[in-house]
Amino acid sequence: MPAHLAAPQSPPSPGRIDVHAHLLPDVDDGCKTVEDSIACARRMVEAGYAHLFCTPHVWPSLPHNSADEIPGRVADLQAMLDAVGVPLTLHPGGEMNLRPETVDDPADAVVSYGMRGKVVLFDLWADRLPDFFRPAVRHLQSGGVTCVLAHPERMRAVQLDPGLIGLFTDELGLRLQGNLQCFANPVGSMTRTVADGLLRRGAYWVLGSDLHNPRSLDVRLEGLRNAIRLVGDEAVDRLTVTNPRELLAPPAD
Ligand SMILES: [Fe+2]
Image (cartoon, rainbow, N blue to C red; front, side, top):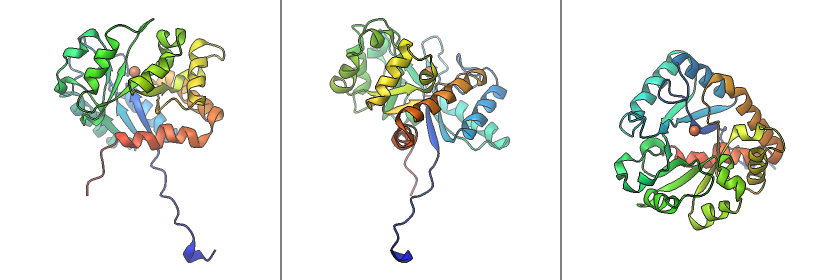
């Protein structure tokens, strides 16, 4: 083919996007100090990440982790990363814990990706699906919000009843976020078995680090390499680059 008819080269990859990280210092059980946050950010850049959503736990016991306060904390940490030359773009978000009281949460109390009110990340810890699950999810979804369930492979209810995945995705329209660390758990462990199975069958929408500190970051990045070994670069790029792009704000005209 003549050079002038060659297909245009695809634009350079924007890098991976971490959709779940407890990077903000001293706000929950994540990074305790700014130094730890910077160390984690530097490692994520080295691992190919260009964007990261700071998703602190949104719990009643942590009232400052709110839609009002998280963006300012993210901006503060971004300024610190910029000052030390770590090229990672941070975005505000949160990991909402699904509770019986979620059905009463006003819309402006819901913490979403980019605080854009479009996509919400939530977690639930339960041995069986509680009765409040459906109404709480429906409440979050009202107004067209897309809900992402954090690390279903870690939920005991899913480990005991893998059929719940079909209910989540097909009946409730949830998207699933897998944790990188689970792909580095011991082979044969319940969490690793469920995580590998969901990855193989294409059930995940995105993968996130769920990083909490520099000490546990190595094993999470080992999980990323294991995931690539299991399903290949293209599939993992879809879960860490292509699909999470939907969460980024559209570029300004
Ligand atoms: Fe988390």
